[in-house]
Length: 380
Image 1: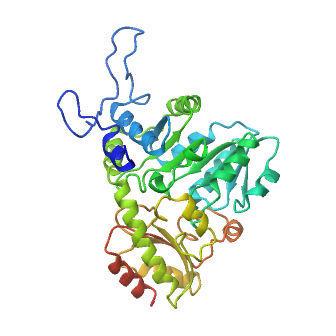
Image 2: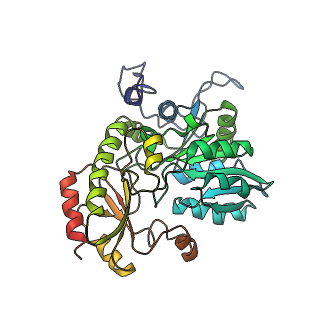
Image 3: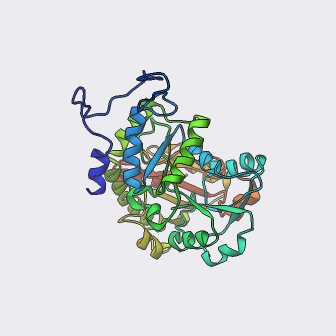
């Protein structure tokens, strides 16, 4: 079955008791067992829940994995992946990553004795020189946040595996609609499913998907032991969102392309970063790796300083001033003061996150209305 069909049917069999076409929300925290020491398919909802199991089946199919795990947030999923490591291990992470991942790596992981280095992944052949004897993992994003870099995922994965590193990819921006990292040999794929996968700003969720059963079992053990599982109701909301994922992402990509082209020709805009533009340094690679679209995220630099940028992002009427992304409504934010405020100033500068940088998440509104909204905001 094709992607869109699997999003609707895999993990969504009619309920055998009632024939309901939507998977029931099983709120039960515990399940009756056939006998003492005899275990049925489900015993306790932290360990497994029918609603969560169903959406995990859908997620695994869409990413092309042997299995998937659903978490209470994207950061809970990322944290679970880092718990594959031990004190004294070293992680190489891309510079263009979400602020929450930066905070996790530099505060939580370091306090647990895990060393972290941010590296420029735009030169894959330089990666091996960054590997230490204790390096165990490479962490990167399929489309970077917020500068929308598109790393050479196949090449980086090959180099990492040659150095016996696990490779984890945050696939939140690209989604499995446009990019399926497991197909390139990546070990672990993470999503903040709060964003595009759920798609309606009403569900907090995270996902890990893997191709290898042994690794899935290790991650499941950590998840079950630590307990950051997705609730049954949020599992239902995530399953609902997945059914329209392909339609939403492709339409958002089309609108984002038009908006990026508009911004590139605007006199109050210094630069535009969007993989679908020929001016993007990774444009050719994006055309090769991304499946028929370039995503719904745009980053651009406005003419002006920190304060003028704050005025611009506060002046939109359709683009909501908020963190998060990937939902049906369009959002706008200033990374330096919002999504990436957890970076220290020097790290922001090194990563190219300037005070005048603005990040757009393009929703499903009429694209002409969105362009008009940006036009009036840029006049402030």
